[in-house]
Amino acid sequence: MRVFGSQERDEALRWLTSLPEGPGISHRLTESEVLVIEVEQPLRATDFDALASTVDSWLRTHTELAGVVIHAREFPGWENIGGLIRHVRFIRDHHRKVRKIALAADSKIATLVPQLANHFVQAEVRRFEYDELNDALAWAASPSGA
Image (cartoon, rainbow, N blue to C red; front, side):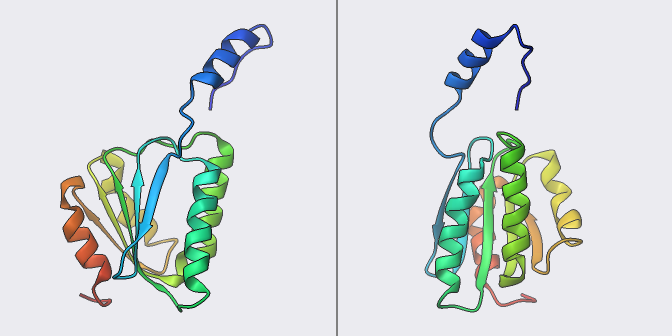
């Protein structure tokens, strides 16, 4: 998000048109019932709409997801306040239906996520290094307590 003064219309338009057009994240559901989220750019509301569509479709025929793996070199933040709000709603609406959440990331903030998340979600949460994606996937797919 960026704020421009009333005299900066042209600069604001240039900035808006320079924003990347593709999704900030991509995701896939594995055969082991784990949702893998690859984070590349600031998170957008539409990213969480796409995630919700995938997860809600899955949950229509299943009781839960084995896990979610978030794979991000660095946390890019949110594109705007709408992205943040939709992120919070996605967590609120889905966290009770996920057994495990793995964060495979190298950023400094990633080290804090498990402690913070344990106050807000019922899932087991564990951090892995960015290059440990396979370990994160295996842990997220394993039974709780493993």
